[in-house]
Length: 225
Ligand SMILES: [Zn+2]
Image (cartoon, rainbow, N blue to C red):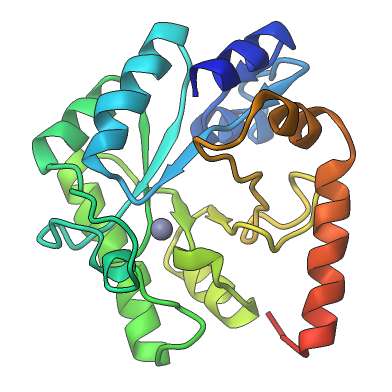
């Protein structure tokens, strides 16, 4: 991640938050020519330890999407599927992070595939996480990230009706930011993304092709969302 932040700095990118973007669309501020919103999903304790230290060192802003069910403790949704067990960030650290200026967004209550659960459960996951996190950080939570990146028009409408201003997907959503505020396409980076891949994803039409591939695959699979 250090290399990623160094590259962004070398290329003249400034990090902004969703709040900055809202201020911009409301006419209250201007944005730098090259800007990027950094987001982190799931809210692991490791992320708190490592990512936050680096973000602070680089003076970079970021949004952390965390679970509303604060009693989960670990990433049981992934751990059950064979992924490494990961401790989730504790409340006091989340509050500390928020107080340091980092944005907190919702990643649902318990990380279900929202396109596969009942309407009642989807509504509960989306609404309850908003109010719980708002109570915790004492600020409005305006952004939502779909667990597993799974969304469709129906889920997007619930997110909008719950009062969020932004919904983040992973591979879905139009390639250009602003095309659909309830299906914001993100560019996934992991600790295994090397500098060349990072440059390809950030500085070339690579991501546009990735989106075309996604769209073509969606049609082939007959997938509606
Ligand atoms: Zn997640």
